[in-house]
Image 1 (cartoon, rainbow, N blue to C red):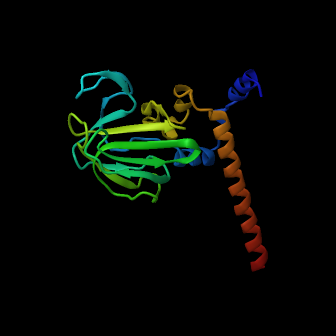
Image 2: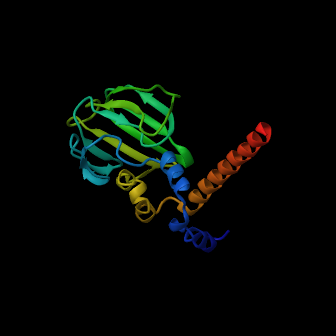
Image 3: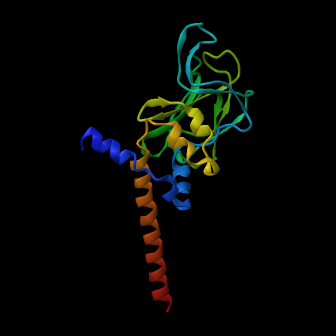
Length: 206
């Protein structure tokens, strides 16, 4: 497909036609909501002067001002890719792999609540915030990446079932049309399988 065809294909995302089962499946699979509860965002994604080194550089995540020991929860289903204790740089660091090439990561932790290779569900406790590594005070540095590329986490933090459509407008680096089509296929396949099971169990019970 040429570049023009690609663009035409991309513009065909009709959010209104995504049913609730597809929306719920997407929100289980991709990071959404805040990983810490009721926390103030202290530093946004983008160019800034580093609070410790004083150099200007890209801040690839979102900082939450939270006390040491604040529980951190998985923003989507996934698997624990990295659990790395460290007293430099990112400090105690954890990364989750989610579906469709997405990851989320957590820096400057106090301690971990999961091990590498563990599967987690959305809302599971994964660790506790801290002040480890190169940090000017207790906070959680939170990143969302798509195929290794850092995205602004803020639209993902603001994303939920009641605010479902906002992400497609605010984050243009993801080919949402093909992603949502893939989820629609998976959901319809699950529905077909469950209706086949229903027919089979009806036949065996009669």
